[in-house]
Image (tube, rainbow, N blue to C red; front, side):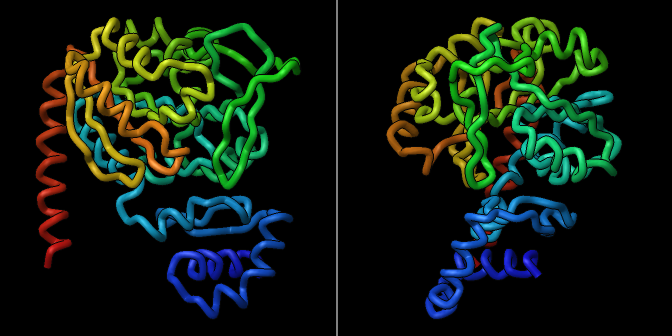
Length: 311
């Protein structure tokens, strides 16, 4: 019954049904506060999630959301032998479901214990390894996750936790088979640069394609300089990037040598209060041919997509 109400909530909140929204408002707000578990079908898979999780609403409103990740990953799968993936901020397992590739091994790391339990259950039929850790570049234990509407933000406090670990330590000591994973996805609401710094050896040695959420709003809340993220990756010989908005539309491609355009990009996505941000896919200089191939494929995809939109 509650799962059916979740389906109605997605319809009423996104389809502009004014009368229905008024009738549904009270029960919906009550259920969001209680936040029970529901079953919901996404990417052709029925999974469990909290009632207040916002992913179904987003997918209902934007048919392009996250499919840029699916396309880029699929093109990398065509280019790299035995491609595997590391997913930091794996949430309830939606990325593994989106990719829907049981032949590709995925290491899913999620710091929120509630989401982690759902991650394990939702991906049990896939080739997925799940770990419950907060990935950090510091031995500082004063970190925890604050979850809201299906997204978890890392905050600092004075509490002790034994779940903080660097990605280098995870790959060197716990999951060595992922040391050569050529695809790294990070979605940690402003903690993304911290994760990158914690993976210096992995990035330097394996040089994976990096697909990360870039949100200056959250970076600045973590007292990070957004510009430093690009400088860090440039020093590791990352040279090219594809930039998308948070709805899945391609914005542009840039070189990490394009300092003025990078500053423009940071300014453009700053000050939006997390309402508008970007996803950026970075490529190392040794994978220049992979970048060129994916860029050309993406240009063709969007040309066809916009032609269809104009019909």
